[in-house]
Image (cartoon, helix red, strand yellow):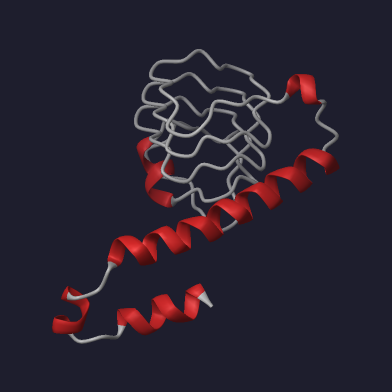
Length: 148
C-alpha cells in the first residue's frame, strides 16, 4: 500500500533517504491520486446530476490568472495545478473539484463552496481572499485575515 510505503520511507536513515528514487515513488503515488480524483469527481457529478453540457474542463495546469469565473458552476472540475492567481471565483461552486496544487494566491473565493472539494490545503486557503460565506471542508479553518 502506498501509504504504508511512504510511512516506511519516511523513517529511513539519512543515507538511505539520499539514495531513494523520490521521483519514482512520487509518480506511483500521483497515479493513485489521479485515480481517486477520477472516481470521486465522477461519482459526485452523477449524484449532483450535473449535465454534461454544464461540466467545466480546464485540464491540468490551466492558466487562469485573473480569470473571471464569478458564480461559475465548477462542480467536479479538474483544476489540478491550475494557476488561479487573482482569479475572481466569488460565488462559484467548487464542490468535488480536484484542487491539488492549484495556486490560489490573491484569488477571490468569497462565497465559494469548497465544502466537498478534494485535495485542498490550508496553505491554499490562507493565500486566497475569502469571507464568512466561503464554505470550507471540515478539516480546514477560516484564516483570521479574511473579511467578516
